[in-house]
Length: 195
Image (cartoon, rainbow, N blue to C red; front, side, top):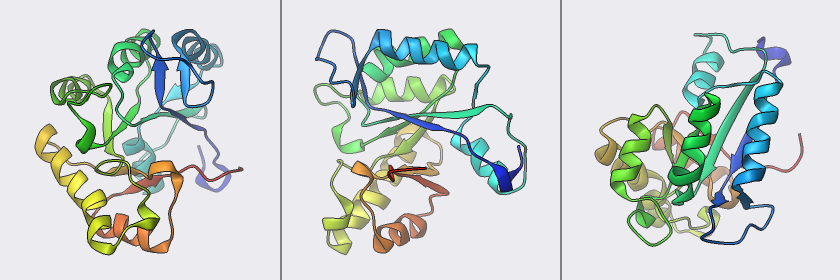
């Protein structure tokens, strides 16, 4: 894939309904809807790539398949492991899971042990801030906790570097982008409206 003409989708998911909560059609999808989406990607010969592979491609170190797609999950909900990971494996897809260290081991969210298992299964882990606060509203010290401390805690927990950040609720400004760069992340994901 050539960079000057590149377009590939980054599909962002949150929770998947496994009976523990009701789907809302936007942030919470049913298992069946998610499986149909994976089936559509597979039938169209889409190949999931990691953000690390995207970074290497942007750096000129590798090529990407013509039909590339990045799959991401925000928030670190329990359904990431109970629903998403088994279906991703079934279809041979990988995903990046953006988690908040401050919510690990709390009700409805992944445990630290399960997050380690996801990471060791070949899925990619990134930070989604320490505890999902709106970054643009924070003082500099609090912004540093959300961006830097979340990275450090995940690196200690997983024993590997964290290179990718997903901005909570997609709200950012130049100060937030600078904090993300200064913390040493390679790429940040957000949810700007439009193509």
